[in-house]
Image 1 (cartoon, rainbow, N blue to C red):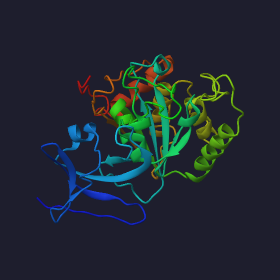
Image 2 (image 1 turned 180 degrees about the vertical axis):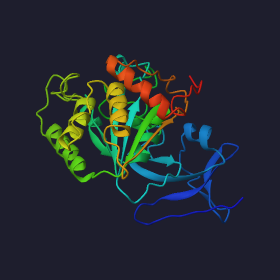
Image 3 (image 1 turned 60 degrees about the vertical axis):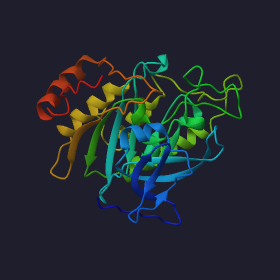
Length: 306
């Protein structure tokens, strides 16, 4: 089996075959030398990617068990050089009532903008960290309750490991539009959030968050409107996703614009039950979904993974 290993001093990225031998786990380079064998590699990675080529690097955060740098691993994904947008509808997390409508985020040229009612989840994040952070250290759910817990300020459990391990993600990919204005809009929105005074009674929350007026969905929607896509509407995650998919596939479709729909099926791990798709609340979006089913039949196939 051909092996390839690649590392840069700047990013300290390791590339090799995720290998398990007894109680040892490591990356194997092309010379047969084990890498990261003394590091803690999360069981979720081993379950899904053992024997496969992956990338890995160290994060500045520490694991609570060994007090060593957390290793993040991810499968290689190449993005094209031309500007692109990926809109991510994240299915509902069963264990959190606040997630009953799902979640939405947006990737612009490999900068993922995530907006949330929690201050520390309003961020620009790389694709590997958004999708594949391990359930270790502060990324993990609390070992006793299995959910978010910050009672211990020195060892918080934010339960925000890789979203693709937490739920199935629906992806709308758009190529061929000017992304610079959209990128700047969301950067400015993050600055507004960061500069908003905290509520002393609930300092971990974004004070101005409102499900109808100021949420992950409405902020992303308003970015599209600001950039001239006035027909993009929606107050809730899946409604915005279907609305945007419909209008980019039909209303705004030009020879230069390419639209693709696909799913990233949930990578099941013990830390998260299977996610659930949320209903469309706007009846007009049900009609738009009917149009999309004819245009993208593979996207709507039942994978029976739930």
